[in-house]
Image (cartoon, rainbow, N blue to C red):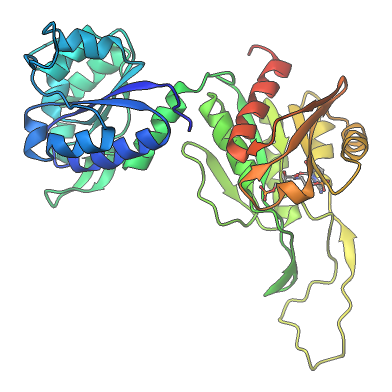
Length: 396
Ligand code: PMT
């Protein structure tokens, strides 16, 4: 429920993408937002007000002179209560009107009368988007401090292909969540490792572990939402990269080591969440091992480089955060790892809670002692960890 307590006006203007706004509304409500829908007259030609009324559980407003507003001040009453006005889809015509300060229908009047931020998710035919008049309006709206979500590029309802598609409802909803997160890491460059590594035995077999990547991906998303530029070096996992995060896929600990060391000197913060294999196979076979050739194979192991310890040893390197998954003696083992790797902060988790699932139980250990976090979902814990790192690293 990342939008709990947030009051959002969802403006819907006339365009075929209006059908996506019904799903967007559902996603915002599901995240706990209190959503008031206002439509332009043209929008009602594409989707009825009844749809939005049913999904929001509130009356939908279209007409500036709606008699349901006792004081005939719908534009003031509705926009003044909002934490955000989001217009999705925002048509070329609507953007032209508000770029010029016009107030010729309820939604445009609400936008003009607002004292909260405004986000637009444009949707239109590619030629309308590329038209110099629209581009002038977009530049003016950006100058006015209005946020622009998209548009995306791709196949359009008119059969053409190009820029102008409204972002998908999930992308707009994610952007709204991001919008409300305090930007405690604004301007910081953060490098994160996540997931397991895979150490090949032969071309089709290997040694790995049960890390799903969820914890590291949640931290990447939280750091991005907090305003950081995030690079995620990921072992093999079945997760999509969080929006706005630069993901680099690796397989083995040596690949991860190379990808991290290439970038570590240029970042401010390094967070090592990956469950890196301590050992790799020294005698990995070039061809698939055959069961009936040469008896039981012997696997020889050789130690992998310690990525975190090497980054921590860099002169003028980033602020380093490690993770320690332990099955017992969490504090003693985690603190010992922190000192051995010479890092200011380590995050301990008991392995029965950490691997695989959505939830986790974390304790932060630094030189002053321990800070247990209340057990929660990995995304909630990721945000708390990011806040803690922001406090420890101070203002940019
Ligand atoms: O991916 P999930 O399913 O969400 O699970 C998350 C997690 C349990 C994997 C994660 O929260 C976690 O605890 N990761 C660290 C696992 C661990 O205990 O690693 P370690 O004790 O081997 O290493 C300690 C630290 O050094 C870790 O930050 C690790 O990334 C780093 N390390 C370790 C070995 C190595 N060769 N290079 C490293 O950088």
